Image (cartoon, rainbow, N blue to C red; front, side, top):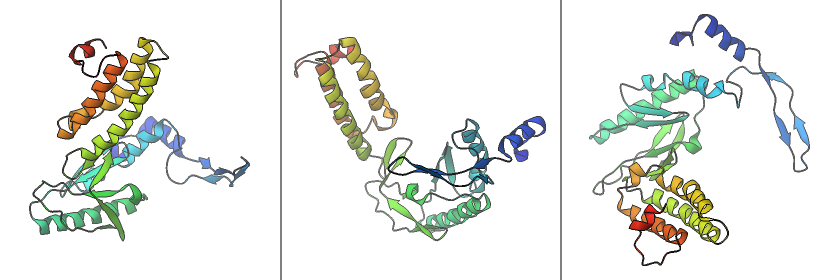
Length: 248
């Protein structure tokens, strides 16, 4: 923290917050009987569930982008980190990728952190005319999973940015919400149904729409929205939705 200019009273406050803390593990069995370990001093990390925990974590990993800034781009949102490597030459791309993995592995070792390999994926962004390059990514003697799509902040990103996988998952969620609202229209007032629509349907549909909204697969989402609007307004399937949207 001194590296970032935190000194004096603020530094002592943080030091007193982190020093001399103890923790233990408590486990419940099927009968809800508890068993716990002995208390041990916490040598690394911040108290779980604390308000300062996320802030201290961000301060702790703040220098990761600087470590690889000369060879790759990185973006950090909370504990989600994405590393982007671009190169037209396949050989140079492989070399840069290998060097980046070495730097990251060294950073993790120096900062006493461990990479979660189950949540770490290698994704190649391709055009429709490009063939996927056979590339094995290794970090700390462990192979990173090579995938065609991955989750990032609630969005499913695929290798061609078609958003097909994300829209497929979104369709399933919205169809469930549609069924719920269909039932509520017979049991609750229009005001209640409208409230449920915005909380359970519209909020899910609109998340990240600035990214996937221009995909040609998105027509399926807007068909579902038209269907649910007709259900809410008790309209015929052939009625135009232009005026129905204004009723919301």
